Image: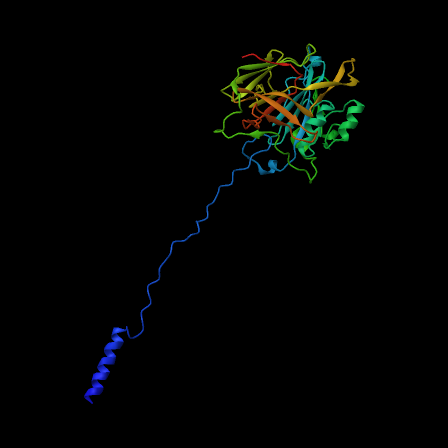
Length: 353
């Protein structure tokens, strides 16, 4: 009996020494995660494609561009006066083109803002096709043309909202003399847009406030533009206005103001030196009508933020968007806002200050 007790006690001691009974589980260990927490990037607010400014009306962002051909006759006497016009300070982009002699006409492109009324509306030229073809089939408001030019316009990539196609959207003012008295309104013209209309692409690149200007940028006071041929609409001058952040426009020695008395002062001016060819067509008094050659490459001056930048412009096809590069070949970015493009004949610009 004593021997059994000894054996039993020995077995118990052995079990205790070997950790007898159920072993407790080790407390769980939490390892650091090797997966980084997801980060969120704020989506930049949308901007209007033709100005680079923040969108204030989403319905306008989706609508097509509207190009209005605006009279710029500036002769002596009321019988040959189109100024002051209405709507030029509301247009996102304006192209100034030579139409005969030194007379110019304006292709005003609307998208982010409206103007009621807008005008005076005048006839089209073949140059217009190279201007509006990149805009995703814009609405085009015009008032007739030479039969040759009219056929070219109607065959081009536009939605025709001109006087002949949409007479009800136009009216003549009694306080102006024909042909400088035909007006419409952008809301009336936009009401004619088809449901499959598309917004325009960006025509220019825009820089953030912290981004530098292009290579070779130097301060500029003013620039003088001459379209040649004597009187007419020329000459034009732009002077930097730091208070407005734009270039105040003068025409034939007087401030170029709209009908509300506000001087035109776009944030950017592109002086695009352009070769003009003779179309073989003349106006009513026999003056040759030229056509700007906008497909190709050439020299340009970019005026932005009080500076001027030497540039090279390139346009590969009528429907292609023109590009502008600095002396290093890098694209030039503009200041967000309105832009005027001056299609000046070669050698027709002088920096005056």
